[in-house]
Length: 528
Image (cartoon, rainbow, N blue to C red):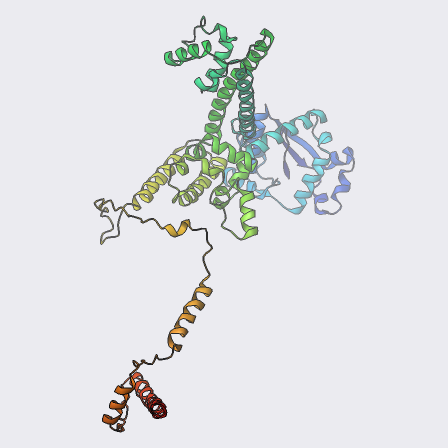
């Protein structure tokens, strides 16, 4: 029986001297306790050494994938084919099937063979002559690193750590530049305050300060390569009538040094931005096409790496960067945020406020696909990202047009714009608002109205007073007056009002009182 043993240095083929020992699997390790015992069971027949690490990596990769490499095929044809009648013991059953199909060699894989491989590994230095332990260790380490890179599809061009560091440095530079420029404007403003109002661009301002120094040098300085003609003329005019204080040469020197620092940092920032753009196109081209290099780099930095970002679902990519707002909304049971870092993408920025949520959700879904394609795919082109972006732009146009379409039978008719008519509303001035007297409450007003109604209904019926008559006329009337006839009372109808009844009653009551008065008058006249 022959044994095929793979090492980091090459392929080794052993011949089994005593096959009876292989039957005792549990006690086989005792036969390999010393190199002398091991040499009694196995004998090295052939050793094929790898030329370099690349060949070793190719052979190891083929073994991992269950294929026959060129070097292994060469060894099997050269050595084993001569003794085709013998069996070949191998450690991988899948590889044995491939060897049997292609080279027509009988292969064996069993627990006894697996134990034999472990024992050979323990005494490898003694069994394989001419291969020192130090060399085997170095080759094993190099092959392990190379194989790990291959398994992870590792490439130096795909190092996303550089992107994380670059975008962080870019943000730090922006903060420092703002602080430096603010300090520079405030410092030089004591000497020449009018210059800050004339020149708005920060870089042009710092370059102008470096060029002129003291404001008295403005008239003799040539600023045509820094500023337009009209701005240059305005600066020279402002320098003649400036209200700033005088400063020493040492102060001007320090201000110039600060301006030089601002100019250098600005130039380095532009260089860093170009580096970041190129790196993003190399590592995540589809992500860059979808959201831009700055937003893509911030997403990668926030997640930690491109692979970590690829593990996030689209809903997480959408609100990445708004975690504080999300948890606050969940705690207070308010509406959750619709977007995080993805809000700064150009597609979301050019959308109306009504459609920002929809576009950010669709963009996050397509961006998540692009991230996974960049992180796990083998291609490095940006065709998928460009195609998805075109779809999103078409969807955006559709959403924007939906606002000016009207509902119709076909759903395609455009809304007709109605003629504009200006309607002005004339408002009359209400003087009641000028009064400082506190207005009465509604309850009080209601009580006053109720009291007025009660007074109206409770007023008694006023009796008509008859004019006073002289005694003579009273006597004449008394003679001619007939006894009053009682009027028949008509039964009041239901529909008649109650007022006539009251009048009749009052008439009947007033008649006897008048008779009494007349009698009293007669008595008085007779006495007289």
